[in-house]
Length: 214
Image: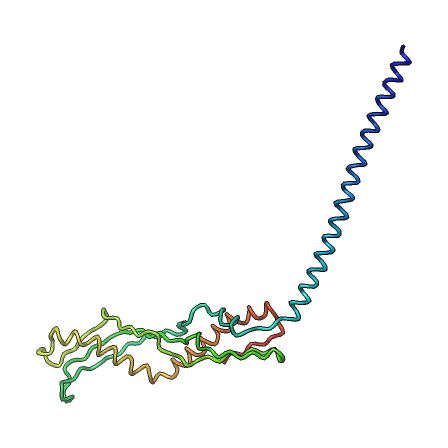
């Protein structure tokens, strides 16, 4: 009886061990299958990546459209000039000064980025950007700064004060036209702005290209 029980336990233990070994074998087989599949997939991905990279390197060519898209703003102010001066209003015959008016104004200038001339030399790996002429974007006279000196109190009228803003605006416009240093500063700032936008992007795509901005 006792021997029979031992044999039954042994038989049951053997079946349990066989079941465990069977499960372990199945798990190992599954692991091997997934490992092999993963290796194959990685191999395919590596080949695919290599092919894509090879194709990418072979086709790296910049286009004018790509470069134009970098400039999201068509106009950008690259210089701001604060100016203060005195304008004079004369009588109709121009012989007598009616009043003098002090004013402060601000002028903003820059370039139209949509007018940048883009030349691309893929063979020599050179991108040349030629900027357009500097344009005045805004002329502002601060009306709160207007201060008058009348040659005669009879000219201290509401009409005279209304014309003062236009007088100052015209005076500021005419004076800035002769400020060559201001235009040069605006142009230099525009060059630096374009370089800051384009150069990092070009270098990221292909650092063999040279960007010339003028």
